[in-house]
Length: 394
Image (cartoon, rainbow, N blue to C red):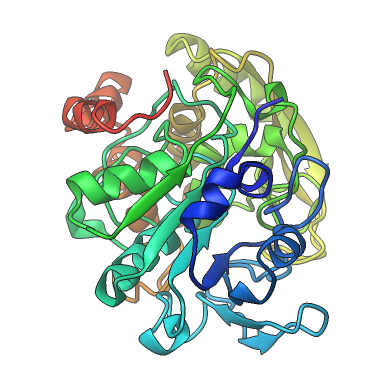
C-alpha cells in the first residue's frame, strides 16, 4: 500500500520531532488515513493541544457545499472544539488573524490532477500568506489519482488567470500536490518555508486504485476515480448550456441537454473521434433527469463517457471536439454561460476554464484538429522543463 503524508506523520517520530510548535491543519472530507480515520482525529490524538486551528477549502470541511461561489462559514467544530476557518468565504487566503499563534500549517488535501480544481490554489494562497507570517508550510503529500505521467491540454495564458487557474500549467498537470507546491515555490515566486512529507511506494504510472488507499470523494461531484479521469475534459461543460450531469449520480461522467438527440448523433460523433484517432472510451447514448442544477426536473438526452483504456483516453481533446461538434449540431441551443464564475465578473467562464479565448474561437469557427494540437503545444516544453526540475518521484 502507498503511504501518504498523513499516515507517516502519525507513525514516524522523525516528523513529530521536527514539528515543535503550534499547528494549523488545512483539510477536508478526503483527509483520511488508510483505515478511513479522519486527519483531525489523528492529529488531535498525536499532537494534543498543539493542534490549534482547522482550515477548509472550497466545498466546506466535509465537502457538503455544491458548485462554485457557494461559500462556507467559519465555525467552531462541536466535537473537536477547534475553530474552523473557511478559505472559501469572504477570503480565499488565510488572514494574519487566522494564522495568529500558528508555527506550522499542515496541508492535507486530495487534488485530482486538473488545473481548474481549486484546492491547489488554496495551497498557493496559503503559502503566500504563511511566507508573510514566517510560518512553515508542511504538505502531507497524496497521490495524483489520475497518475503522474500523462499531461494534456493547453498552457494557461496569464491574462486569463483566476481562482480556477493561477499559473501557466496544462489542464492535466501530472503533479502531486506536494510537487505542485515545489513548482510554485521555485518557478512562480511564492517563497515560503516549505516541507514535503513525501509519498512512499508510489510510482508516477499509478492510478489511485493501484495505491491500495481508500477513495473518499474530495468534492461533491467527484464520487469516483472514473469521474476524476474524465474530469479534465468534462469540467468544460460547466461553462456551457450543456448539463455536466450535476444532479445525477454520474456527474461529470454524463452530459446532455433537453434538445440533444443522442442516438441520432452518435454515429456522427464516433466518426469524428475515429478521424482524429481519439480512442480509449465509449459514448453511450442515454436520457436522464437532473434533480438540481441545469435542467433540474427536465428530461435530457445525452451521453455517458465510459473509459475503456486509461492510457489511450484523452479527456481534454475528446471534450474540445465534442464542444465543437455540438456547437454545430445544436445551433442556438448551444451557448456559453455568462459571468460571474469563480469570482471573475468580466471574462467568459469558458475562457477562464480554458485559460485562453483561443479555444472558444476554435470551437466557434470549426477549426481543424491539427490547430487544436498546435494550441496545446504552445509553451508546453517550457512547462515540462519546469516540472522536471521539481519532481519528487521517479
